Length: 304
Image (tube, rainbow, N blue to C red):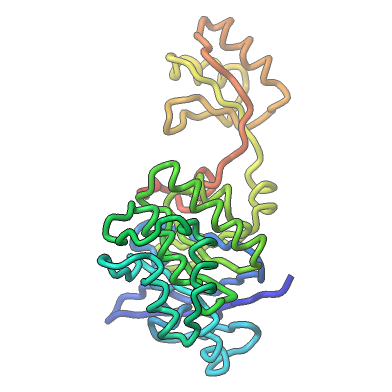
């Protein structure tokens, strides 16, 4: 699989502060690339540079195999939704798409209807977009990004603030764009559980720098599994397990006990706790999540 976009030490400096520093990312054609980081980490800055909305202070990027000015000529093939979608609230979704189409020289009623169908807005009729739900507005914003048949779309927090149903609908739509339309997607999100269900590759941005980049397969091989024990006596459970020789034992953010070693001895772990008069409400083996891995490499709390 070839790269549709790469960057080489891409940097954006404001005054004396580097909002993004020496960013070198690699986005494969036909994949969903998840960009992860805290608020202020530099995600939006990177996306603005890659979409042509901001000029890098230094560094370069390639697009469809071309670099420099040649790469910039391909920016018309890049669709963008950064921050809030630019929607006219007093007209319909159809009219909003039509205005963008006219500006790009592709005004055709069937073309507009196809885009509305792609983003799940084919049945909203003449309803003004000002009365749309947040999820509907986000889907329309993605529809606007699809005008002109881009090969790559860049989406900044498209599921942020959505209710669970809206998140599922947007996720399914993005999967459809990747699988059926073969559109490459770069997406940032604070909802790491959902991003973990969606993305094929990831880049972690921390304090303006890219500190890790990996595929879903690499994530699985790095993360492994652990035993989770739910109990009301966490301190006693940790003490009993460590006394029995288990060293990789901790209490996670949900106040559950986690053992990250000797998974084949899970039954023995439970017996150890029962013999120590520790109540065990539930125990199971779990895969390390994307959020777990993110926290391990950034060394702190995920502040969403």
